[in-house]
Image 1 (cartoon, rainbow, N blue to C red):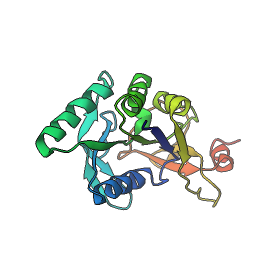
Image 2 (cartoon, rainbow, N blue to C red):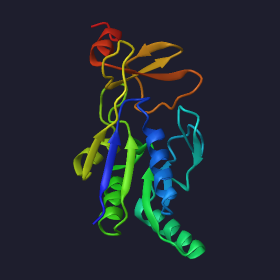
Image 3 (cartoon, rainbow, N blue to C red):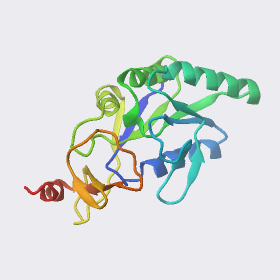
Image 4 (tube, rainbow, N blue to C red):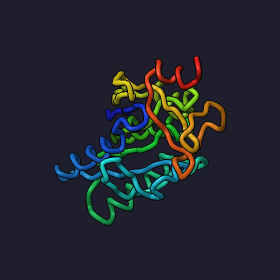
Length: 198
């Protein structure tokens, strides 16, 4: 039986880089992978973008209303027909944006279809609240692995501070993708509280 893995960390902890490295490792051994991400993540359009400058186009985007297992099955069958080979792994970027139902479907892919699923994402938003997808992954993934990064002060970062025009904010919608005005900084708990004025 294959497993569902959740590899999580604060912003800028190297999650996308690790995902792209995992894809490379499989393919270096002549094993094939499919890459996907939620359509909600508009950063990079159809690409997974690493801060190191490595970019790769995903095989498919997942809309909130779609069944992840069905989409995966369609792409895996198409790949198998075209290349006479099977898919060895499904790699999911920005998995915090999956719905809880889609996380359940990822587990079905691992257990019922016997294809490992490696999901990468952040655990909490800028208000330290769980994303629904991340919460469900924490509940049912076979394996949890924290990818670590450091705060500006040198301590382990665990929170994601949101900045608008360079100023930290603590109110707003859960999802705001990086852009001209919105950016994020990984912070330790002490620096997060300091930015809140506590």
